[in-house]
Image: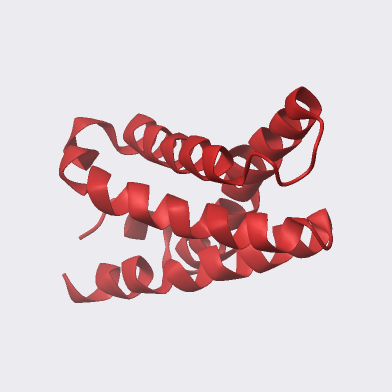
Length: 121
């Protein structure tokens, strides 16, 4: 049984589909995007650097949470982080709120697989 399943299916659902996307998007996307905007001064001028920083933050955060057992998943975490950061950067030109909400939704959808895997393996 997965460690996260021990907290209960409803709590795992809230954690994976609400709390994780909201907090991780704030830490991995909103914070670096705003810092880079204030340092560079032009919104969007740093998009690829932002994607690199954001995906690195996602990977480091998950290593911090799951420990060394997460190391084999680093390549996929970097790719996932880059995809989420690209989504955020794409919509940030229109609205930071829109970018935040779309990225949270995408992150929640990506968490469907780990949630369902808890019941299978």
